[in-house]
Figure 1: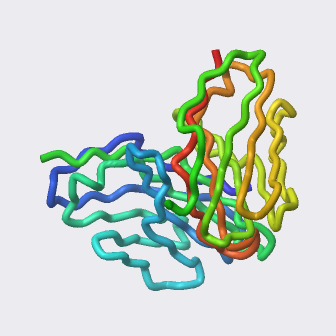
Figure 2: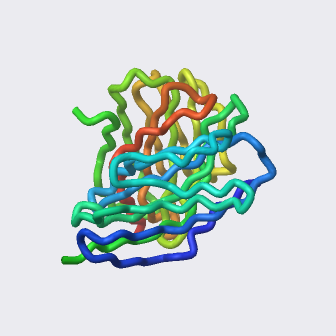
Length: 116
Length: 114
């Protein structure tokens, strides 16, 4: 079974600064997908970024980028130029590429507070 | 209309009540999911439906009864719940239940069992 670990329950960053959220996972699979989802106070889970394990290049979406280290099973999220609207819970998630299911395994989340 | 809509947003019920949560998606997706989100725990997958057929029941107690009348609607019928069932229940959908599809989530139904 897969497990996803987010070791930082809470983090704080000042507006315009950069912050990195950690995520490690455990799997015996070779092909899989990794995701970061954001859950703001509105509670709706929103996809931030997605990474295919077979791609060596780190995914980037505007101010959000990942540092994917497959051998270390590490998948951290970097948020640059933090904005107040980035305040949310951030969940790291893992999905097997079995071709039979789209089941996500989530971590426990990191609560990010962006301050003035 | 947002992609995935859940009602009600909040629900308080006694242990002997019967209530239902509703989820509706307007994305043309064929797979729908129920997740349970409790404080300080990872999201737990409860049920998966693919083209209206249940393809996953993650050992969920029978006091939770899902129903998927069509690919756009998903219900979670609740009866004889326990206080530990209090949680945020999230519905999600994806184009299909296979491959690495991105899930689109609703805003959840916050359930409190007294």
